[in-house]
Length: 336
Image (cartoon, rainbow, N blue to C red; front, side, top):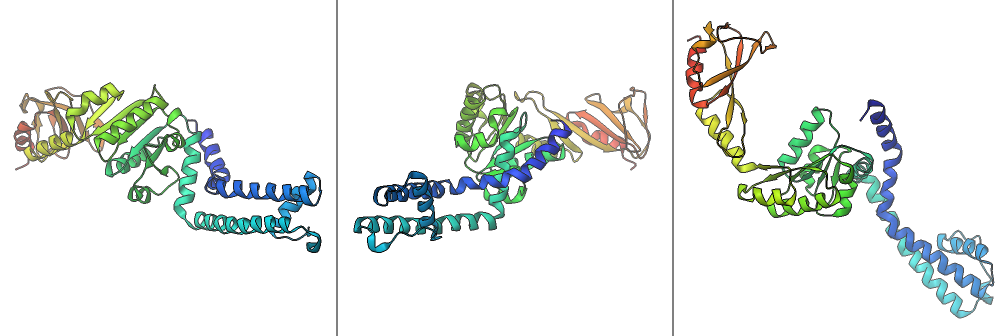
């Protein structure tokens, strides 16, 4: 999305999105309109007014303005009874209407949710993050730092409050309406991480139905379900507990672990290691099972070197390889 489009979207959101809170009072407004029409029909029948005048009179009665008031002594009893019923209904609807408006205005979450729904319905090519828990919040924060457009759809009030913004919808991830409000139909990708795998699978099927070309990334707890999710249309499946276990195991082997490059078949996981250089060492002296990938010199990344390059104190070496050999690398680079 261009910078100009982003600015226009931000301004339009501030001006237009708050009015989407009207969706919370659609029912009351509709019922009040029906009451006005009922009053108009009564005035057409008993006062013999034309419909325009009758609607005007009906609005006056419902709003209790009192600009139109027929002679009560000349009104039939049935007309009086019908008007009493409509006025009582109108009073009840007013009470409900005012309560809904007040609750919406004083509730910060209602305004944020309304803005997020408006934004989601106008975004294109963004990422929709669906689910609950830390994974959802962390993914959203990461995309925000990268400057990428996203909308979060969560049923968790904790996640909603933590993220606090105009990009979080507090709704039901299994609801087609809430999914559409998030802009799923025009999104380029979706990250789905529900509290259990069954719900994750259900949401995956829904988003694939609403947007078949969508790039879908699913976080699952049971890696035995990977094939099931692939059949459901998921493009990427992340077995959460398995990955956490592999990271933990790698960290237990060596303290210099900075990350893990995963292969889903688990046959060739590669660990990224960071080592501070404490003395001069030629790269060729390091274990062959370790592949140097970057040398950090005075804060700058240097990927250009050979096996004959000599590491100097103060530099940082980033390697890729088997963490079983990290202790040996650390011993060779340590000043001690």
